Each structure stands twice: as structure tokens, then as C-alpha cells.
Length: 496
Image (cartoon, rainbow, N blue to C red; front, side, top):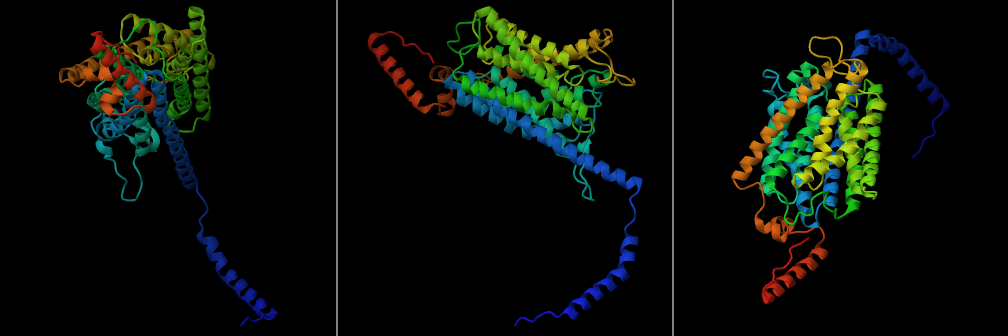
């Protein structure tokens, strides 16, 4: 039964509420201490850490998404009978890398240093949250103001990229067990050792004043040279002729999609390497330099190839953009925008000449991985010695200012530092790659069984094909060819 609220009831309720407020309000106001400078600083620091953590995670997601770009690029550039193998290897590389990076790689890269050469702790993410629920910050070899787990994830995405670069050059003939092994070894040792030298605050190259902002040498030179050694020891794919240019791509649509994804992902790769948002001007500079390098590389490659052949070559345009991106990855935080254009233009031409060089040596690199990553990774690293701005470059240990490049009035010192560091990285990478792939070859797990060369690696290793209907027709034609050769005694052609 509803009862109507009388006016005097409302007045009584308001009066009681006013009395309660009058009694307790002074106590409430007095209990809330005014903010101090220290409390405001603590709040600001926590907010900055939260923003930086979000930024690094988001850009790390972009870097990880580059695995999709590499997969699509390789799927488009390779023969159709090796696409499933390439897709699986790209996917499984990430799966292997995350576990090995967690157990060993991250500790070697950012653990407490032994003489500036290798990390010795922080294995299996041994830093745990404190009793008060606070999470560990950074790592012994990192001064980044983000928690350890965020730093770990961002660096894992980089480690996966180095392994994937190698996969592309060795596609179509690598034993799957061998791929699992070398992916694990790269994530456990060869890649994180270089990371420790360059990006750990305790690394010997870092203390020397060596500069590589986002990985032209650490990621791309390491991946490119490892890929070259692997492709050399593997030997060419069957029927790999003619030499002189990249083999025909089987699906340019996939290759273009993959390249666009990679370009997009590079906006995580380079800007994310700031590891924070405090310096928004630096983030803007890195982003612009990244974009200019990509555009300049694409244009110089396609125009240079047109001058040579009279054709507007899509594949070289795609690889030219990637070459420009690789080249500006190291210097993007240390140079003016005009310099990134020059570096990108140089990268586009070098990728064409690099393919010519590798083809002349009869080394089968079906995606041009060494020309894109190895050659341009080195060029981009050395470009800092010419174009580096002293106010932006790293400070050598014990000094108060960075070094300027040769063309920026800084003399030869920075260029010499870059040359020493790059030479050390290349020598270590090549020597380790020969040991690693040589061991795989000795135990019979580097190259697939010769039968896989005959029937196709997808069918032999995986029992699948990316184009089932087309492959069914090819199998029928192959069987018909065998029957005719049996009847006539003439060998059938085994093509793709």
C-alpha cells in the first residue's frame, strides 16, 4: 500500500542531513592532507610509467605483427610448392623463440654483465613481484623505466624478427628439425650476445659509444649474415636457373601485402625503441625518418631497375622500401630528415646491386634477404658515422657528450667506433653461423631429403599444399609424365 510522503517528512529528512554534514564535514576536510611536492612527484612518476608501459606494449604488438608481414612476403615470393613450409617455419620460429628467450636469451642479453660480453642472470624471468605487489623494473642491463615483463616482451619481438630473416633466405630446402634447432640456438645465444654488447648499459660496445638505435646491426645485420651462411651451406634449390636475378614470384599480391604490413610494423620497431614517451619530439623524428627512408628506398630501387631493364619492377620496389627501412633503423634517432632520404636512396640502389652480387656467386637467396637486411643493415649502421648529430648520439663511457658524424663536423672518431663495432658483430655472427649450420649439416638436419626436392617440400614434409586444387592437377601431370617416360624411356621434366 503506497503512502504519500507528507511535506513535513521531507523537511525533517533535510534537517537531519544538514546536522550530520555540519558535525562531520570539518573532520573529513581535516583528514584529507593537502598534496605535497613529494606525493605529486610520486603520482607523476607512476603515471609516466603507466603511459610508457602502454606505449612499449602497443609498439611491441606491432613488431610481433611483422611476423605476418614476413610470412606473406615469403609466401608471395617463393615457389608455390614451398609456401606451406615457409608459413609453418615463420610461425614455429615465433613459438620457439618465446620459450628460449624466456629461459635463456633475455638473461644473456640484459642480465648482469660478465666483462661487457654476456649476461649472467635474470634467466627464466627470475625477477618476481615484491611482497608489496610491486613489479620489478627494467633489468640489470637496462635503464628503461618500464617493468621487466614489458621490456621482455618488446625484446622478444625483436628476437623473433632476427630468426625470421634467416628463414626467408633458406626457404624451400631446409630440414624442419634443423629449422627448429637453429631458431632455438639463435634465440639462446648468437642474437642475445650481440644485444648485450650493444643495448645493455653494461655492454662493451655500448660503453664505447657505439650507436644502433633500433637494430640495423643488432637485428638485420645479424639476421642477414646468418641467412647468407645458411643459404651458402644449403646450396641452391633444384632447378634454380637462370641465375642473374631473383626467381619469379608466384603471388605478387601476397608479396605486396606482406611488405605493406612490414612497413606498418616498422612504426612499432623504430618509434617503440624509445622505450618511453617522455621525449615526444624524438618519437616524431624517428617516425618521420622511418617513413622517408622507406619511400626513398622504394623510388630509387624501381627507377634504378627501370634504367637497367626498361621495366617497372614491383619486386624490386618492394625490396627497395624494405632496404630503406632497414638502413634507417640504426640512425633514425640520430640524424636529420634530409639524411634519412639520402640513406634510403642509397639503400634502394644497394638492394639491386646486392641481389646481383649474390646471384653472381650462385647463392640461392629467393627473397633477397641478404641484400635487404645484411648489406643495408651494415650501410645504415655506418651512416651514423657520417650523418650523426652529436647532441643525439650515445655518449661514450665517462664522457659528457655524444660524437658527431664526419659530415656533421665531428671528425672520424664516431665512424671508427661504428666500424669497430660492426666488424666485431659481423665476425662473431659469421663464425657462429658456420659452426651452427655446419653442425646441422654434419648430423643430417640442414637440408631436406632429396626426395623432397623432387616432389616438393610441402608435400614431402607436411603432406599439404597452399593451393590444393592446383597441386592436384600438377600431381596428375607429373604421374602422366612418369608413365610416358616409362613407356618411351625418356626422363620427365621435374619443374614447378
